[in-house]
Image 1 (tube, rainbow, N blue to C red):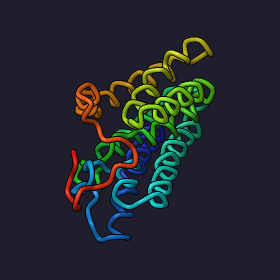
Image 2: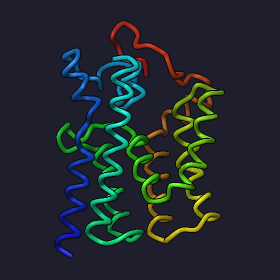
Image 3: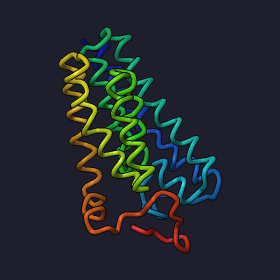
Image 4: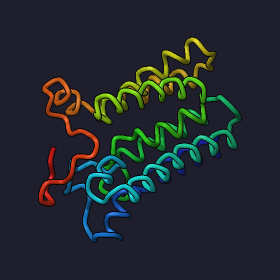
Length: 205
């Protein structure tokens, strides 16, 4: 049991590595949480730093989720509670990072890594719908919410273990909580669309 706890803690610490914050400091010497939407994630990296850094942040954040799940598989086997807990811990780390005063991103890229590793087919189905919604509306936040909402639905129809299903539901709660202001903005048609730029270096929340 002690080893399982260790890998869960390691997964949280891994998730706490905010590549968006680190890259912004390296490239521009700024704290990205003070620019654009103020979010430490790939979408705001695109807005503030451009396409290349945004893609790098996206890939690295996804990898955090993948590595965390495999740590759990190593410690507790496939499809069990340990791998699920490691995935959740990585997302918690991304959202509330120890190294950056517990102010991180919204966890969607890391969620993609976690759910694609735990349940590839349901995550793929949900991801296709999410991407289509982003293409049509240009709201990344809407696509993100559709992804986390639909993944547990597709799990019900494609086969699942209870740890994976509960993980998807917990992740959805996290995502909707982190996107609560985005939900209001979408309803009011004030949400920033993908490709929008930072205005004069100020936050555009």
